[in-house]
Length: 215
Image 1 (cartoon, rainbow, N blue to C red):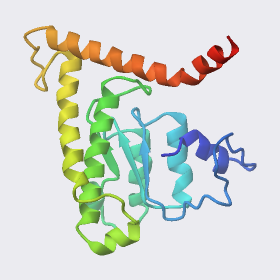
Image 2 (cartoon, one colour; image 1 turned 135 degrees about the vertical axis):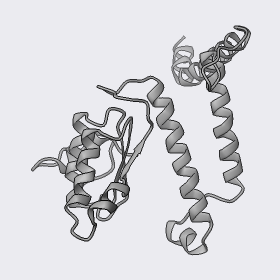
Image 3 (cartoon, rainbow, N blue to C red; image 1 turned 120 degrees about the vertical axis):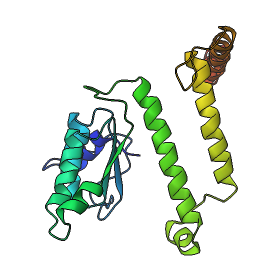
């Protein structure tokens, strides 16, 4: 995963401006014929939209994960097939480069339900690609896959448990029905806060060690 702003810094101007701590440069980062998946909740913010236009000169394998079918990035990607003389009009309608979470119009990049929907969609894509690669020995060799057949059931179990966990967090099931008691939601909140405290202790471990050493 690469930030679209970092790609624009490298390729979007006459003088490359790589980000600090970013170990890539235009001479070492080859994007020719790369399979690109652009993730944008709104499908129209500046950086992802500019990347979808910029990368068309490098690769034709560009897809987008967004909130609905008709977005600015989606229009750009559909135009790629419209310019292909080998694709007839009917096929253009069904050949889609767009993966939609179907959460509706998003005027910005909100951290809300659309994030959960995007996570779910990307998980399903990953499961499908993994199953396809594992089905053929040649695919495994070409991709240098580290995924095993035993990993797929674990991933699917985590995927299903994630949906159950989301129901506990919001206090309603997947059909929109409210849970009968608040105990489940309260328990989930306590578990999350306890996990957050544990991570906070882990992050602050070095700081605490320095303070104790000074004391």
